[in-house]
Length: 298
Length: 123
Image (cartoon, rainbow over the protein chains, first blue to last red):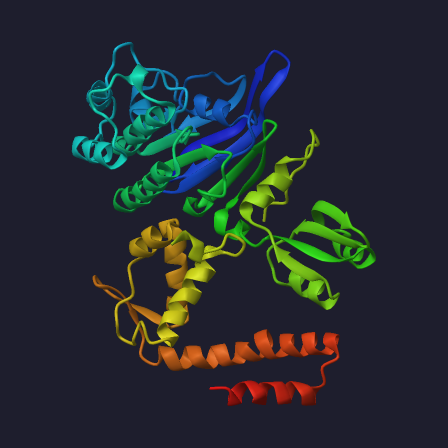
């Protein structure tokens, strides 16, 4: 069993709102996944189902080979950090760290205290007196020091300044290298974290629209610029993501199937080629108003 | 060092190119050790699997080789082979592109030769 998570035809509805719609995917052991999508796309719902905080309406969810509900073995292997984490009244930062030791079998106390120093988090401060960014930091420290075989960070850096985000990326990579584990990072801020990811899942309006290796995705999308007629000849039959006219010129963003022939053809037509970043690609994929689309995967 | 890597091309290809450049420039001499995958990952802030893919690309080409238990090393003759490869690419990447641009601007081959010579004379 090399898959940490198996999700088949997962659906979650609230009344007549489909929050998650027939989603299927697998999470392999020891990789860093990005679960990307816009606000309200269904990312958090999916993660709450994985961590048994919500029941699916239909579909099958297996985590470490078993259904996660009221499953102590499975839940002890997961650490889920979310931006809406609530703490008991009067808890101090130090209390949170002490409690975490009971929840997570792989908890590393020394590492947690080292992280407290790195992030300059005041140990004796009460949780309710922490700033938004400090609260996020506390969650990140618990997530990293838990060394949980499946660690989920749901939008972990709300209110975090650039320095703290940098420390988070550094420590995550460093600790992941030394203690390989499965990590799911959920966010709509793609540019900063995309290069940390090995695999990318994109959720849009409750559907999984992309499930692909991050490296295979880089460079797959590009823009061609040239006279409208030539650009349209080129884009005919291709996966067109965006088309923007500028006078007699047109800039079209296309998703290629990854081989070099698409680029060669554009060059042969005398079209100018411009690169498209992952962040831009995500924007194109998830910006169309409520039109369902499926991206050809592989 | 994030700015050294861009997000519009596969990162493993960029890592391989950076190692190649260091070998060509002599900063990574033949039979010297290359940084580990984890060192690349933390330096460029990239996923370690991606860094490993870049290194393995050069292993497959015989530019790097693995010493068991020690790490990755630059193979003997790697620099000469990279130079040859890059010289072939030079024609495609620079000469062909330059000629296309020159044609667009109405610069003749003679004028182009004259330009190159003018530049070469400047120390």
